[in-house]
Amino acid sequence: MIRVLLADESTRIIENLSKRLGQEEDLTVCAVAADGDTAIQEALRTQPDVAVVDAGLPGMDGIQTTEMLVQYLPNTGVILLSMEAENEAFRRAMLAGAREFLQKPFSGDELVAAIRRVHAYGLRKGTPASTPAGASPGAAPTRGGKLFTVVGAKGGVGKSAIAANLAVSLGRSCRVALLDCSLQFGDIGILLDITAERTIADLAANNAVADHDVVEEVMVDGPGGVRVLAAPVSPELADYVTTQHLRALIEQLRRTYDCIVVDTATHLSEISLDLVEMADKILVVTDLSATGVKNARLLQAVMGVLKVDPGRFVLVVNHRDGAGELERGYVENVLRTAATAEIPYEPNVVATSIARGVPFVLSQPQSQAALRIAGLADLLAPAAAGRARPDADAAPPEAAPKRRRRLGMGRGRSDPAAASD
Image: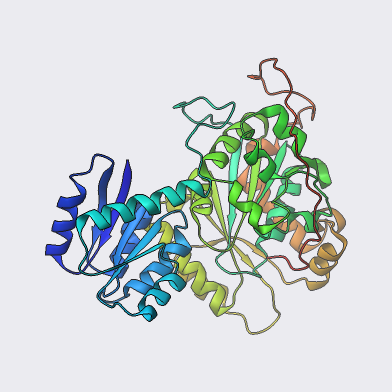
């Protein structure tokens, strides 16, 4: 079934389009909206396959709405409707990210055909229709290890460095997996000075995300005993990885690890929102700059639309400058959230750590930054911190003997970017 969102100011047009689409067995209208803001909210809530958007929406117009949908929901194909016939209208629609452009008036058959084309294009982009190998269709997720998803609404706030150091700190007393799900430009490899011949993209391309043996074969050893699953070596390979892959992968890792730390991209996408939904705790990292706090507030608004429980949020304030910062109390008031952890400004500690590829919780464990990260780790997983580390080679209790799979491909790692977000 293809789920469609309709956004048009005219109630009559919405009714006519809904009636026409209702005649098709494979189409259903999952939401309607009369303005751009409502269209974004309804799209985030219902996750449509296709959004039909009128260019003349009030408030946020159709072009702006299309741009927001493409940014927040890249797997939702957009069809832009317009009274204009000029090439300029078509150009603006394509630049905004629309996959189809229909000039008004159009027939119901034309709209139905366009919806099916856009949906078929989305399927060709790589969303698998089948259950990943090793996963049980319809099975309930297996709860076990805790999932900590680290998010940041702005690049450069120290999100990746905090994720890496938190994973290593947790790894001192329990078994930890660190996933680099900043799929296009992940920095975990350079922060930990590791090279991975195969990555999460190889697991996805081989449909092996739920195969324990293959997952362990692809993961690499990081500092402090942390096991790391690296991001793809090239941005275009990120398209191999879908939310279905990540859900099966997380379910598998929960069986083996006490804690799973996931670093995410700074832009919102279906994948990052899904990782937020699955998380036991969501670490929102921000600096004290005006732009960082503003973006963190916008991120909170999106999470509110998605009905994410505020009790799962952990605010981490990272000082990145010695001057020009907003006051912590003011920031907490703006975000309506008390900071759980505050990482002090220690440029030499952090810069040396990044340059050497050694987490500062290992290289300078008595620094204030390292001590604050250790305190955060204890707050997040106190039960895990009291357990002895399991044997690294032990198989999960549920694992049954099976033939070991090996991936048939291997990709060399390209030079990582020098900056960390």
